[in-house]
Image (tube, rainbow, N blue to C red; front, side, top):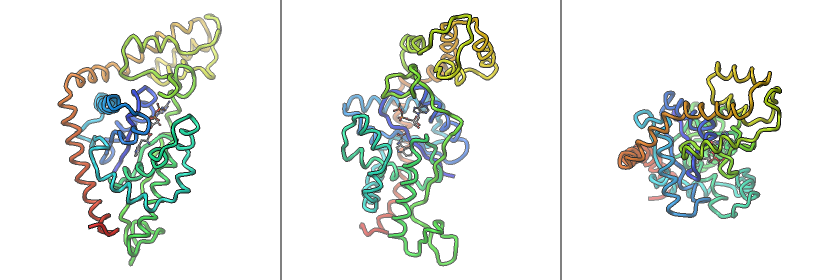
Length: 337
Ligand code: ADP
Ligand code: TRP
């Protein structure tokens, strides 16, 4: 089973990114042939400062490595290092209906939020489909918001195969029946981790870099403390039972504490006797228990950029081998010498 996913290097990573995406990647690298990349070409849609673009790409690589992705188990690479993806992006684009892109949720959401409606943003799902199809991916672990993109990738793979693969039957995409040919582009499936609900930010909305409500994974220690201490709470008295609904503090404790410790918190939360300040201290401790080891590895890797670069180059070489095999077939199929 080939597994592939990526995270855009468009901001500093926060604990929502860990629980919603990277934690799953770390588990999946044990289950199949895993490819994880840094979507730094996609990030150019929103990061328009070259220094920052480079820094965030490096930061994402450090985050992957320090949170437990292992280059011996998974292929780790930068999207921009495998140029084949841009060629497939174009070729695939020739069979993509404009109307599909017009109904893409992510585009509509971003434009509604004030992002400039540029071609790159509009064509974002095509490059994402190329990312996936280039490596004949079976499974793509993603958040709910990305499901439509995987469906597009499937639709366009079918369109491409129908157009260019003689004997391809969309009802039999793997060409199992006599006289049928398998598609050149394999149809991927989304895998959504239902168990990770949306991680709330310090203000109670979804944690997101665009809302400025994040708790960063590798941020400065003082800043982390400040963020945790600023988590929104209500005015319930210390002695009174506290509401569990719409409490980001309660939800974050549940997410980060081991089950038995959370059970204790849950009990006092519901009977009263402890103030929100105590619970925030508990959360800060939990943060350091969970992310302390990764933060330490992160500091070591920051000091060894050559090693990080070596890992990325090695990943890119492996990814490129796979990509160039597929592209040779695609070129032949469409008539590019
Ligand atoms: P952001 O919302 O900060 O811009 P991205 O959209 O770049 O984050 O998300 C990168 C990955 O992290 C995606 O797989 C997404 O589903 C996951 N993710 C981001 N924020 C959260 C959150 N608050 N809760 C759960 N998962 C999240
Ligand atoms: N669009 C994804 C996100 O915002 C990132 C991404 C780019 C991706 N290409 C991909 C994810 C291919 C999975 C597969 O999170």
